Image (cartoon, rainbow, N blue to C red; front, side, top):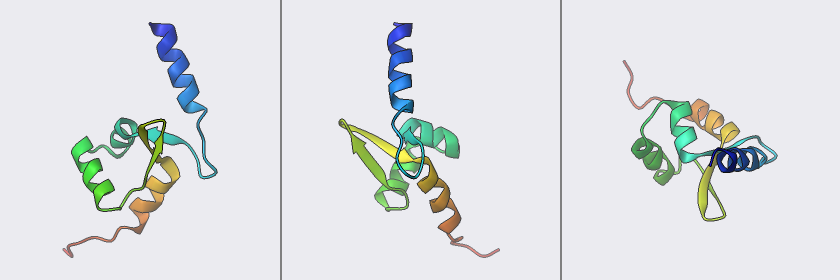
Length: 77
């Protein structure tokens, strides 16, 4: 079983775009330190873009960083 996990991880890590690494939704949520429900909300609001590869959903790490920079606060303190 460990070999299958290693092979799957290696093949996923090999998936790259011109912009950078592709992350699963779970990995993206962990990177951002948010719940999957929050991540799904951001995807539904088109804050983050999702790519479908083989029936699974992935996010681009570079685009996540760019989306965070582009967001403006909704409240002024």
